[in-house]
Image (tube, rainbow, N blue to C red; front, side, top):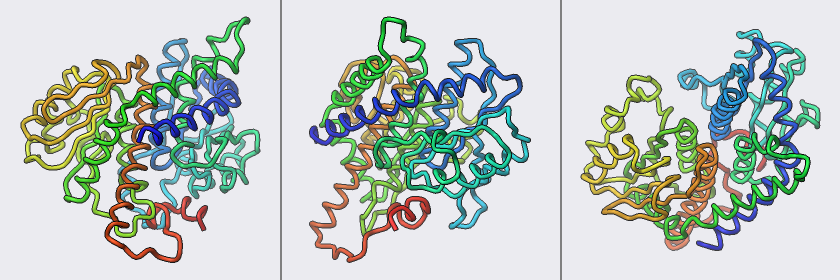
Amino acid sequence: MAQFRDAYADRFAVGMSEYVSRYSREFLCLLEVALKRKRSVIYLFGNGGSHAIGQCLKYALEAYAAKYELSVRIQSGVDVHQGLSGPEDDPGLSFTQILRTEGADQGDLVVLISGSGDSDNLSNTARYTQEHQIPTLALMGSYNGKINDVLPAERCFVTPFHDQQLSEDIIQSLVYSFDLSRRVGPDKNWLEVVSKHAENLRQVIRRIPAHFLARTAQHIVDAFEAGRMIWVLGLEHPALSATAEHTAHNLYWDSIYEVLKPPPRFIFSSPTACNFSGISNDRRRGVLQNLIGIPELQGGGFGLFYTISSDSPGCEELLSQWVRSEMPISIFSATGDEVFTHENWTTYSTGLQDPQIQAGISQIFGHMLGRLVRLRLLERERSQNVQLRAEPAQFLIDFDLAQRRLLE
């Protein structure tokens, strides 16, 4: 377990250092041009986990603009309610329609985020922006997709190796490296600054206790096999909430890659589960535990919290319900005691101060969990002598068209 964690941390740090040192300042320059224009819009488009990364980027841009007294309007382009009506083989929400409806033009900026670089709705958007001369760049995990065929090579910021989860983690590292270039004075080397930043994050990941990873992964597998609910909740900061959704997405899909007989997965994530959670009044702390059904837990399932502090009022209210249910819970926190176990819940604190960096490390934690859960499910199948198919299994079952095409 520790070797797996360390290998993931090492590979992430190498990829992040190369990616950020190569693209970060150019990326920030393009963003600042858009931020300084009057009445311009920055569009952030992505599907699934890439949408969650776009949301984190949105929150970081808003904070950055406020810090340096810049005006900004950001459109993430996703209305979750629109995604309920399309056929199963639909390429995704029409980002092109959003640009057309809002009258996007040469004064705006479009950022496409795609781990595969091959999503149909994103490549269609790239084609539209090129036809209408709308400035566009793509943050991608592969050179092999359709987007790379549409956009100029200098506007495709591609991670140094193709690995879906690691690529997403590396892309998200741009989110919390905005201030790096402003810290570089005449006596500092840019590559050294980025390398030190990457090394610090590598050490943060390596400090995550192997037993905390193992415990959390096993509770998820147990909940899957028992057919019980898993709650993945992000509290206190919007980036943590978006990251919780990303982890839930990863657990639902990526954790069953090549698992021939996947267990049913019942997962609730915040904030876009759509059972009133998108409505502000229903996100109030006093009714959150009722909204997500905690009073009816009856001791089943598992909870995973991403939080700034387990002592925060919102977290404390939920924990009071959880403790009574005797349901196990893992809390991945930024502050507090490094490792703390109490009754049926365990907290690990990273010691990070920046909520965006905490969200990024939480995303990495979620990706590691997805791989560990997958390995345990595969191990279970091998122990049960499940007959393996001759042909390769399709990634993410049959629904992620971009990933399926790349494998084929």
